[in-house]
Length: 149
Image (cartoon, rainbow, N blue to C red; front, side):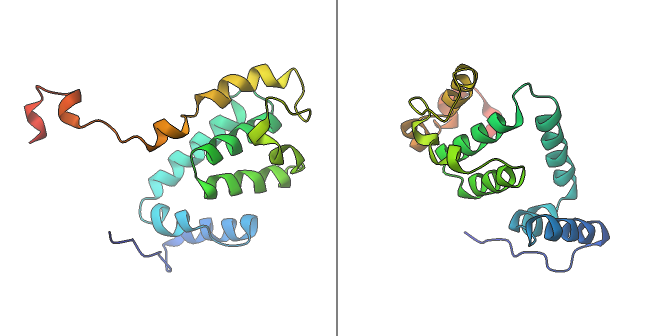
């Protein structure tokens, strides 16, 4: 499989984005250099999703950060988990609660009010077994679809 090389000399808009990322994270993140510099409209979509997640959800920001890191860890996205943890620490959350995420049901670091609300979010991530299971072949899902060929 061929990997796309990072774009080192982007256009004007992406140079501004690179500068903002450098100030915010200390370096230009690889998705910015590989994906978003080739399709800046995806950056706009990602920023819109992030804005909605920050402003239109009813969970408090601390719990939202915990759920984000937990689901990212369960889905084996180390980049997402590290970024979520770094942003939460930057907002003032201590890393103590994140250390107890694998055993969140029995931990005393989580308040009784936050556990029922987070239980639904925590169980939405797929189990380890279902994450390893491949998708079924498309013919079994759409047996009469002749337009696949």
